[in-house]
Amino acid sequence: MFKKILIANRGEIALRIIRTCREMGIPTVAVYSTADRDSLHVRFADEAVCIGPPSSKDSYLNIPNIISAAEITGVDAIHPGYGFLSENSSFSQICKDYNIKFIGSPPDIIEMMGDKSTAKETVRKAGVPTVPGSDGLLEDLNHAKRVASDIGYPVMIKATAGGGGKGMRIIWKAEDLDAVWDTARAEAMAAFGNDGMYMEKYIQNPRHIEIQVVGDQYGHVSHLSERECSIQRRHQKLVEECPSPVVTPELREKMTQAAVAAATSIKYEGAGTIEFLLDDDGSFYFMEMNTRIQVEHPVTEEVFFYDLIKEQIKVAAGVPVSGNPYYPKDRYAMEVRINAEDPFNGFRPSPGKITELFTPGGHGVRIDSHAYAGYVIPPYYDSMIGKLIVSAFSREEVIDKMIRALDEFIIEGVKTTIPFHQKLMRDVRFRRGEFSTRFLETFKF
Image (cartoon, rainbow, N blue to C red; front, side, top):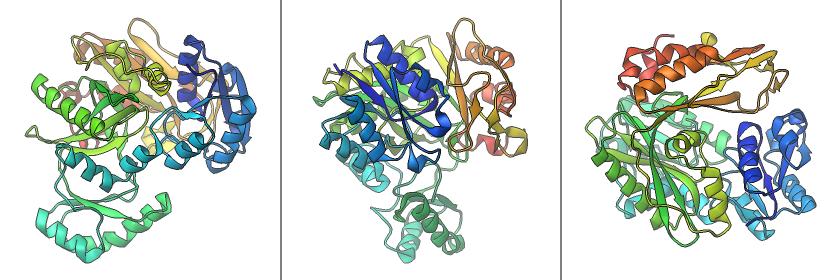
C-alpha cells in the first residue's frame, strides 16, 4: 500500500479523499492556491503545500508545481480527484516518469477514451451500441452535410475533445448547419485547443444513464450498476439517483454487460463510468467514458455500502478489484448539488462569505462539503458548496427525505440552488420519474 498520497485537487473532493486515506492509515498532502489557504482540505491533511496564485492555470493545473510538491513531501502516489488534471494524459505520464503512481487511468487509456470519436469507435468494436453518426472526425463542412443527410435530421455536432457542452450544437434542419459549424469549432478550439468535430444522430428525449465500473491491473472489471443523471442544465448534472426509475432488471443486465465489455476491451484500470443515452423504446447508445471518479459517486456508495475512493486506491496499489457485479436491491439513494448560484437570476454564480451554515442530519442523510460558517467561496472555481445525499428503501421515501433535508439546510450570505431543488422534489412529473435530459426546458421556476 502507498506510504503517502498527494491530493491534486481542492474543495469537497479533496476532503473526501483525505477522509478515506485517514481511515486506511495513509498520510496525505494537500496542495492549495492562495485563495484556498483557509479551506478544510488544507486543515485536515497531514501536510499542505501552496502551489500558486488563485487562477487554476497557475495552481491546480500547474503540473510542475504539483510535481515539485510531490517530490518535496516524498509521496509515492497522487490522487487527482475529478476535474482539473484527473483526465489529463500528460499528467498521468509525468507521474509515471517520476515514479509516482497516478491513482487513475494510465495515459494511453485516458487519451483513447478522452477523444470522443476514438472512444466511440473503440467501444463499437467491443460490441457496444453507439449512436448513428460520422465514422471518425468530420473533414470539413461538406463532409458534415453528407453525414447529416445520410443519418437524417436532427443531428448534433460535438467537439471530439469536449465536455460540459462546449463546442456542442444541435442542428434541426439542413439550412442551419452552415451557421453553427464555424462557431462550434471556434468554441471547441478555445476550450480544448482542438477543433476536431464529429456528428451523431440527435436523440430527442433521452435519459442519461451511466454505469459505474472499476478495473484492476490484471484485466478484471466489475460494475456497480447504474446512476440516473437526466436532470441537467446546459449539460451539467444537478440531480443523480440510483437505481434509475425506468431501468428494468433486464435492461440493467444488458447495459452493465455492455459497460463491462467496453472497459474490459481496453484493459481499463481504476474507477470510471460508461455513459449511455437511453431512448424511449429502451434502446441505449454509448455516449462517452469518464476515466475518473465522478461527482455523483456517493449515490452508488450509499446504495451498496461501498467506498469507491478506497477501491480506487487499492486497485492503484495492485490489489485485485473486489467483489462481483453489484445490482441494487431494496435500496435507493439520491444526490443534489448545492451550488453558490442564484436560481432566480439565471443561476448566476454567487461567490462570497457564508455567514451562517446549518447542515441537515438524521438517518440516511449525508453531506459532502468543505464549507463552514465564515468560509469565503472564491470566484475562481466551480461554485459547488457541497452535495446532499439521502438514502432509503424506496424512491418515494428518498424524495420525501430529500425534501425534509433541504428544508433543514440553512446557508446565509450567498445565494444557493436549495430553492430550486425544493421545488423540483415536489414536482409531480419528477416524483413519477417522468423526465428526460430536456426536463428543465419545461420546468417552471
